[in-house]
Structure formats: structure tokens, C-alpha cells
Length: 522
Image (cartoon, helix red, strand yellow):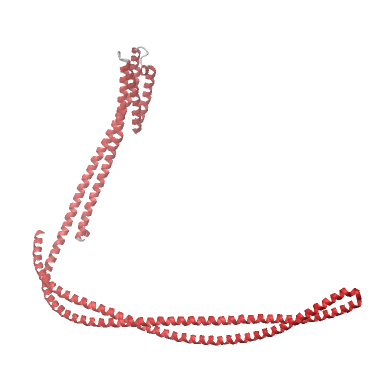
């Protein structure tokens, strides 16, 4: 309990509310449990016992109606129409007895009920079989003397009927006993629950009152201590308010002087900011110009590299051309060798022509010796001689043509070699000079590129520094403006503090009066 009293007031009240809430929850739980049990018992009565007693009562009523119909049929003077109507009522009521009794049997629970139900079925079957056998008029009307049926109905059939109705009465009494016991159980549990709830309510109320008294005493003590502390501090508040008034007056004059100095500083910083912005703009323009120059330089380097690649391609083409010319020279030399072979073969043909002419001459000589027999052969020898002469003439012409062609081809090959070799050497000299000049230009342009990069980096650094300086000056300028606004706000707050100090003094006086009233209330 001491630990609770040492807590803050809001925690003490929270604990008190929590305890009260817990008690309410306990009461609600006990009440709900009790009502649930009572409801279960009552529900059992209304859902089971009442339908059971209703079904068995209706079955008993139908059973009696069947007996009434049977006894009505034994009365003298009833006509056939009435007989048929009573037979229909008898059959209908007898069937309804079994139907309603079966509904009741489905709701039965105890062993006593089941035993009585079994006995009822046995006695009912005995009554039904006896009636169907000994009282046939119940189905077809009269076929004999009415007095004989009356005796059987009033004695044997009635005896069996009363046994069945006795079972029904016993079942009704059993159901009523069960219902009564269940009602008594519900009433008993209700009384017990009511006592529990009253006891819990009293205990909860007593506990809540005791805790409330303890908490209220603790709160009263805490408020008393707070009042004494507030009373002591109220005088200090009064003294502080007087000192605060004096200091606020000094603060107001100092803030006014500070505001004038800040205003002068702000104008100077504004001029510096404008100069830095101009420097920044110039540096940015220079950086843009340098960037454009560097872009042109990069394009020149790109063109030099392209030219260098093209010269290299021309050199490669010249080398390839020289290779092709050499290949053509080789082919011409092969052709020249073929012509030389043909020339050598022409000398062979001349030899053959000479041999052929000699052979023709010898053949002519031999033909002349043969006389008449050799005339045919003489003609052949003459034609062979003519053919040899024509072949020799053709071989001489071919030899002359070959000699001229060989000399011309040889001259063409030699001249072509000298011209192509000279042209290739001239191209090589020109290409080497062009490559050298291209390499020197590339070297110079790369040096210029390095210079441009250095200039660009320096210009960018200058622009970046100028931007940072401009941003710094803007921040300082904003800070000065904020200081100026703050000094003005301070001056205004000083005046407000002076007014508040006066109000605080008045408030402390009213607080003392309120504390005296609170002490009286406590």
C-alpha cells in the first residue's frame, strides 16, 4: 500500500479505476456463468420436458378419443353414417397415438422412461391385436349381436386399454418429476448465484471504499505538501518578476543597438555578395569558352586520327598494288617462258620440215626409178613436199612473230617494273612524310589538349569556389537577416517580458489568495 501511495496521483487514480473495473468484470463473469447455468436448465425444460409432456398428453387424449369412438359404436340406435364416422375417428386416433408417442420416445432420456415406453408398446400391441381380432365392427360395422361386443369391449379390451393408459400416466408423472427437479435445480443455482453476487458486490464495494479512502488521504496529503511548497515559492515568483522587469528593460535597449549594427553589416554583405556573383558569372563564362575550345581541339584530334588512318590505308593499298603488279610480272614472265618454249618448238618444226623435204625428195627419186608403178607414189611425195614447204613457211612466220613479241613483252615488263617501283617508292616517301607530319600534329594537339584540361580544371575550380563563396555569403547574409529579425523579436519579447513580469506579479498575488481558499477547502 505504501508503494501505491508513493506513486504519482494519476497512477494512483488509474490503479483505483483498474481495481474497480476488475471487480466489475468478476461480478459480470459470475453473473454470466450463473445465468448460463440457469438458462441451460430452463432451456432443457422448455426444449425437452414441455414437448415431451405435450406429445404424451396429446397421445393420451387421442387414445381416449379412440376409446370414446369404440364405446359410441356400442350404443343402440346409431345409423350407418354415424357408424362409418366413428370407425374413421377410431382408426385416425389410434394411428395418432403411435405417431405422437414416437415423437415423445425420441426425446426420452432416462432408463425409467425407456422401460415404461417398452411396456407401453407391449400393452398397446396386446390391446390392438385383441381389438382387431375380437371387435371386428371397429373396421366393418356390426356382423353379430351388439351385446357380445359390449361385454368384450368393457371387460378384456378395457382391461388392456387401462394397462396402456397406466403406462402413459406413469410416463407423465415421470416427466413432471424430471421437470420439477430441473426447475428446483435452476432455482437452487439461482439462489446460490444471487448470494455469490451479493457477497462479491459487498466485498468489491468495501475494498473499493477502503482503497478510495487511502488514496484520498494520500492525495490530500500530497496536495497539502504541494500547497506549502507553492506558498513558499510564490514569494520567490514575486521577487523574480521584479528582477525580470529590470532585466527586460536592459535587454530591450541592448537589442535595439544590436539591430542597428546588424543592419549595417547586412548592407556590406549585400555588396560583397553582388561582387562574388559577378566573379562567379565571369568564371562560368570562361569555363564555357574553354570547354568549347576543348571540344574544337577534340574534333581536330579526331580528324588527325582519321587522316592518319586513311594514309595508313593508302599505304596498305600501295603495298597491295605492288604485290599485285609483282604477281602480274610473274605471270608475264610465265607467258614469256611459254613463248620461248614455242620458239624452241618452232626450231623443232623446222627440223621436221627439213626431214620431210628430204624424205619427199628421196620418195620422188624412188618413184622415178619405179617408172609407171611409182607414179602414184610420186604424187604423194610431191604433196608431202608441198606440205613441208608450207609448214616451213608457217614456222618461219611464227618464229618471226615470236621474236618480235618476245622483245616487246620483255621491254613492257622491264618498263612496268621500273615505273611501278618508282611510283611505289615515291608513294612510300610521301606517305612516310604525311605520317610524320600527322604524328607531329597529333603530339602538338595533345599538348594543347593537356593545356586546355589544365585551364578547364582551374576555371572550374574558380567557378566552384566563386559559387561556394556566393553561397557562403548568401548564408551569412541570411544569418544576418535572421539575427536582425531575432534582435527585433528579442526587443519585442523584452517588451512582452516586461509586460508579462507585471502580469506575473499580479498573478502571484492572486495565487496567494487562491492558495488560502484551497487550504480552507482542504
